[in-house]
Image 1 (cartoon, rainbow, N blue to C red):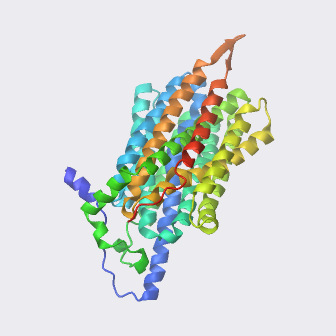
Image 2: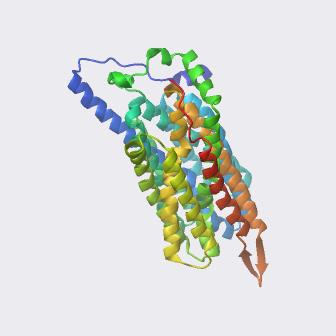
Length: 447
């Protein structure tokens, strides 16, 4: 049984090339490349809808006495921890897998989990299912990155990686607008159900348009794109992945990404809650403000690859430093200016979205992939992934604990103190910038 499962997820066998001439092969290749790229972008966006659904629903859950802030922090952290472990192992697994089947499976299961969560209020069951969702969520990014490595050249990888990274922000925007509207109109349970429906649609898109390898579709690649055959055997995969594990620069990048993810998910997980509690916004208004960061993140990710490839000859260091500092400034505007200032909050989310969009693309993956052998890109992403989401998980536990621990009853009303939260979130963003500077001169390993 286990062998059948392994065989099901093995890389697709090459299909007959057929009698295509060079022009016909080129046209077919381009069509399949774009189908794979676009379906990966849209499909991973729907992954994010299923992952972030809980973040929109937190305040209604607390108000209805279902879970406390600390319990929500624990539930959220369970997903991040299982996602971190899964992203590490599935990153290695994806290098030698049928990524179409792997990615579709992950999205199907996480959509089913969202559907079930709409019908339960048990803390234990909720935590177990949300953790299960985290494991299957980890199949998405690894599949996409390996797909980009298989279908696109080193020369244009940064550009397409940047465009693909916009899928994070597309999913976030859909969550903060679509799911928030459902919750406001019908209640928190329907928010999970709506996210599940989006997930099921994403599965259909992946099964239809996402492709495993060029060879499996009967097309050939230009000579400069072909990975030499010696890199396709198990021994070579193992050697390349061991090289990644021994590279200290990749681990430093992973730690820098972990601190960046603390600031990223601080806003994604608790930003709506913060605006509702500290500034008095409604769920719809708070969700709208946070969604601005997601929309601007699309601009950031799209521009990131183009800027680094065209202006800095593929170097990522300078853009990461600039946008890392912008991230710190954005958090200061968002957290340290008291009172309701709609324009300032919007500006903060514009800057936050642009900076996080670039940082997710580079610090959250591409810089490590650049340092790794080509046939170990999934492994490099796995190392960054496990560190990033351990950081995100610690963030959720710490944030929930700090928020509830600094809540007081004044004249019969609950009053929150976010002072320590401010230190935690802004400090993490600063540490991320410092760690990135430590690998300024790191060089890639040979393929």
